[in-house]
Each structure stands twice: as C-alpha cells, then as structure tokens.
Length: 341
Image (cartoon, rainbow, N blue to C red; front, top):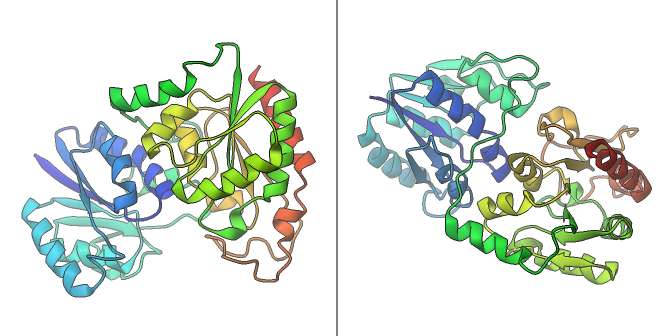
C-alpha cells in the first residue's frame, strides 16, 4: 500500500483548489492511502473528500508555532511511514516537516521556501490557474479544458437537512442569489454601498438575496442588509464550509470578492461573478466552471498591489474598488443571467 501525504496548510481557497490534485493522485496511485496535513479551519474541506483517508491538523498559530513543537509533531507523524509527500504549500514550515518525515520522495514548487529540503522541485508557473499548478506538481496531464474539475464533496444527511430547512417555506418558483461581501483583506472588499446597489437591482429582478460568509462577516452582512431595505436574508455564520457549498447549490448566481466563497461557488458548480479590487485574475484564483466570470477595474498603475491584498490601500485611494461602479457589476450580472437562460 503506497502511503501519500499532502501538505496544505494555507487558506480555505487554496485548500479547495488542492482537491482536484488529490483526486487525481488517487487515480494515479489507485492502491494508495492519501492523508492530508491541514490547519483547523480547513480540516472539514479535506474530510469531505471521498479519496482522503485521514486529516491531520497542525495548529501553526498556537500549539505548533515554535520549532520544537514542529519537531515533536513531525516525530509523531513520522510513524505513518509515508512513501511520498506533495506540498503545494510553499512555507518553510512545510519544508521542515517534510524533511523530518523523511519520505522516499518529496515534491514542492520552485518558489517554495527552503526548497532544498525536498527531493524534487517542480517549476512554479505564475500565469496559470492554481488547479493547473497543483496538477503540474503531480505530473498529471491535462489540456485547456480537462483541468477544470469540480471537486467531489460528500455531505452528511444531517447537514443537508440543516440547509433544506432554510427553504421549507419558500416557493419553488422563487429565484435566489447570494452575495459574499467579506474577505480577511480589506483591499479585496468591494464597497458596502456598492453591494447595496447590486442587491437592489437583484431584488428588482425578483430575486431573494442571501448574504453569506463566516461568523466574522456577520456584522458586515447585517450592515449591508440594513442599508438595502429589501428582500434580503443574512445567513453569515449559519453554515459550515461544506454546508455553504450545499446552500449555494440552490442559488442562481453568487457574487463574491476574490476570496474563499468564490471557490465554494465553484464547488457548488453555479455561476460565480468574482469582483477583483486590489488583486487580479492572472494570479490564478478565478472561478473556472462554466458560466462563471469576473470583473475588474484594471486601468491603474498601482494594481495589483499584492497577491493577498492589504488591510489598507497603500496609497489611500482604493481606486481599484471605488472606480468599479455598481452599474458595471449589475450589467455583468444581467449578462451572466441571460446567458444562463
């Protein structure tokens, strides 16, 4: 039995975009056990994959923050005797853990920190999608279309029933749209007032609009709800990640920032419109399923100002968000909805 470990201790979006790679690993090594090393917030994602055997959690912000705790953690994990390790995550911590586990082979990218600790290095292609980069890591062949895989997600009956409860008293002819206004980076967030204008437009087209997000997005969603004064429901913090995917399957469209909900929408395989403020599509994290799209104001010398965004606009203008007027976003939504019909 071939034993494989995938190390992905990055954000939620990065983790979701690792799932196609893991599924293809199982295809390449059919008689194998695939474990994943993740962080607490992404454990659920990997546990919901039908091809993942076991998810190990490293709390790199607390319990396993220091080098000694990493050494102790790795020593315990080494008992699994992995034959090969793939690390799409490029941190020095991932490299050290890989070296301590001492597999026969290990793979990471040319942009990885401490890359000399891996036995095999794969060139990081910056101008392709993250899913493609991850498939390159395992040398899986693809063409312009075959890489666009919708990850397989399993959800429990209880979780599915929890989502269904929100639609019991609603009519089958109702149309639903979701808006995810949050992000951990402020310069990735489209304006509250602009989102309000987008909501008013959707309501005028007879949509029931749901504001979605994590527990941390509750106040933001509530603020937008109060400004909109329309048929809007705030469900931020009500669902887990996997439940959110199930919830989104009921939506006609999702409008989101360049953040995790974009990738949840892809998993639900619904039309997703991603709004790029300080970041750009070319970083490789855009929605790739059919009928999804993106919108961005790019005629700026300061854009992009960083791959992850910032807590504040570096030049105090936030033109990347302010100049992308809601009328443009509304026009794009109409175009997508017409294409869907």
